[in-house]
Structure formats: C-alpha cells, structure tokens
Length: 467
Image (cartoon, rainbow, N blue to C red):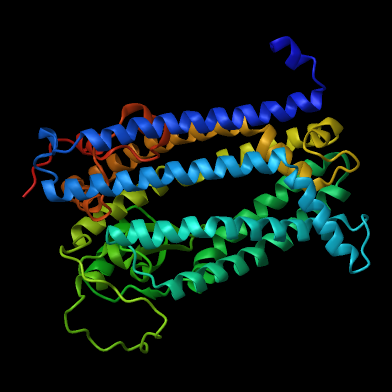
C-alpha cells in the first residue's frame, strides 16, 4: 500500500497528503473536543475547590452553555471539513477560476488580465463562503446565544450587519490583493521582500485606522464620561508612563452581553476601549426595566436591538475595572504587543521566502487541477493554506503556549501594582458573566486555551481573601 502511494505521480502524492493531513487535524480536534464534552457531561456538581467561587446555579448554566457550544462546534466543524474535501475532490477551485474567467471574458478581458480574474474569483469565493456559513451563524446567534441569554440582536440587525461586514471586507480585501499580486508580478527575484514589506505596511495601517474608522461603522464609540473611573484610569496610565490619549466605551450590548476591554494605537497615541457590558455602573443590561435617563445624543433608531433584562447584575465595579486594565497595560509594559508583532512579521517573511521558492513548481498547481495555468493568487492559496498547513498547526500551538505565558505575566504585573484582590474578584465575575466553565480537560486546555483556565490564574494570584 505504502509502495503504491509512492508510485503515484508527485502531484497526486501532494493532493492526497493535503487531504490526509487535513482530516488528521480534524480528527485530532474532534478527539480533544470529545474529551472536553465528557468533562461537561460528567461534572454536574460544583467541585469543592470551586465552592467559594461559583454558585451551583451559575455552574449549571455555564455547563449547559459550553456543552451546547461544543455540540454545535462538532457539527459545524464536520460540515466545514466535508465541504472543503468535496471542493478539492470535485475540482471546485479550478471550476470557480474558470467561472471568474468567463465573467471577465464577457467584458472583453482575456487570460492576460490575471489580476482582474483573480479579484472576480476572490469575490465569488467570499460570496460562497458567506452564504454557506450564514445558516451556521444564524443558528449560533439565534438559537445557542439566544437560549443562554447572550444575544441582543434582532434578525434585521444581524442581516444588515452581515451585509455591511461583507461590503467593508471587500473594500479592503480587493484593493490590497490587487496590489499584492501586482508587486509579486513586477518584483523580480526579490519580490518576496517587497510583498512582505507591503503586507507589513497594510497591517500597520489597518491596526492604526481600525478603531477610528472601521469599528465605528458597526458599533457606537463614546468617550468615557468625566468622573472617578476616568480619573483613576488616567492616573494609572501615568504611573507606568502609558501614553493614553482617550478612553472610549463601545456599545457592545446591542450585539451581545459578553464583555471585553482592549487598547490600541502606536507610539504616543494610545487609546483604551471598554465594552459597556464590562462596566457595572454603565451597562444598559443592568438598567433594563428601570427608568432610563434622557439620551443627549439622540434616540435609537427602530432597527437597533434593545437590551434584554438579566436576573443578575453584570460587569465589574471601578476597582475591578482598574485591575483588568492593569492586566491589559501589563501586556504593553512587558512588551508583549511588540513581541507578538515581531513574531508575526518574522513568520510572514519566512512564508513569503518559502513561497518564492515554491511558486515555480508546476506540480503544485497540477495537484489541484491547474494543468495549463499557474495563477499567482491560486499559488498563494495552495502554498499558504495547504502546503504550509503542518507548519501553521505547529506555529499555532506554540503561539497558544506563549499567549498563556504572557497572560500569567500580565496578571503578575497587575498584582505588583497592588491590584491582586480586585483582579481576583474581576476574573470570577467575568467568568460568571460569560458563563465560562471552570473545569477543563488538561489536553484540550493545553492545545486550545490562549488564556489559562480560571483556577490556574487564581492560584497564580495567590490566596487572596475575598469579602
């Protein structure tokens, strides 16, 4: 059997190797998910170690929520893997490339207009992906998230948002792709250096403009009102020389009751963004059913979803918010952000360098049904998505391990700022608000968790006495 495989033409060996590796990864992921689902099903009572952290009602809610998510992930993952396999076996990629060529030929553009054909191909591929993924996204939002009290969207808002995301994505993706393909075409022997520099510039520009120009297309950002919290945040930023310029609150509650916080910006222009669901005194989800103050910035449009009542108060108090931000600022102070950017760009340069070596290999194109042409976009897809997949899996695992290490370091930074007790209680609250399940299979956790499990973080913070 092994000998007969090696007797196959090299392009067939490449094709079957890609399929076998893809299913190997899927089965490995499915096995890990099975181990974690077994934990969800068997751990029906609060472990003694968690008795003072989580009540039995919240524990059961989080167990059922995570079990539903895991079951959904199994079926959606099986569909995705099966769809990808069928596309490869039935020649879906060369077929779609041919359809793109037919579209461009209707406008009098021949095969020499490869970049134009590539953009049509990319548009058709993203449309296909959007339509096949829509039922799964709808089910996840309006069945699972709705069932467990997280969804705040109406169907109309969801669909309008999906269309808007698709349009914005195309407005960015198509020009960037066309320029990248052009650089590769004219770059000569050192095109991989120019291509890497171009993608570096694009990523830096997108990081810079995202929160100011792209994110506000989808969510409402307002400056954090003057008051004790804002003053304390600014004082904490000054204490570690963090060049904070603005603090925003994003209206995340119109989509979901999940909470988050992050910072962005380069050099002396740093900004902090807090989700309204993170702020105990700000979240509209805590005010549902109460008399609402007049909105100075105008009424909500009828299409905006309204917050649904919740039984328990959500979010963190001001000291806990400062502790969470102490953790986030720890990432900056300890250089985690810069380290991640450096790792990302080193990886990008390596991949473009290897791409330059492999792009001339005709057998790679023949393996995926391109017998008579070698389009650059298809080469990028084959090499980056399929040929590099073993490397990508290994890199992803290494980055997950590194991320957990960074999280522990950021927690330690917040503790060194004297915020251990507040971070301890904030982590417990955020886990409850997001229905995180505090018990994890060790192998599933090691492979998937970019953040350490709750108990490990609490142990690392030490025995902090809670009120």
